[in-house]
Length: 212
Image (cartoon, rainbow, N blue to C red):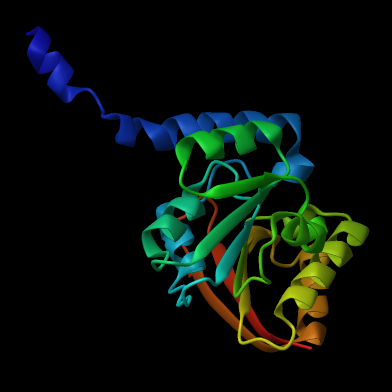
């Protein structure tokens, strides 16, 4: 009977989404303006966000706000050999969790608004891809502006792109509309994917390229 009970217990891989969800929910309750979501992104949203990275050897992909790492796991699977990854996470607890969960990847504890200084400090090139899990609809305008300025600086004059997502229920909020209007002014290309309904809550993936 004992061995049968053990065989039916979930594996560590099966328990991780549940544990991550509890941790994410706790951080949301303590600081909803910076976490911006109740649950981590599903693997369906993460895969839609990451897509095909198509990086050359030595090129860099940067992830803003990786949180507990659902999109990071998708990046690790898709990361071409010889390319580089850097995650920028403001929450110290999430940063520690990420460094333990992904020991082969690099993470920086700090703000995405400081992208230029972070890259210079680490001796890294401008990224070819930037992925974001930041809650833009919850960020104050000044923070939005700083992050967008860094994205445009990094991608201007390149074939690189920026990818983020917005929840369907928040798509019409003033801050969300402000973010999209600013991005449309500063990028020539735009694509909306979704909604990704197999996520709680459903979300659109937004992709921008051609930084002006």
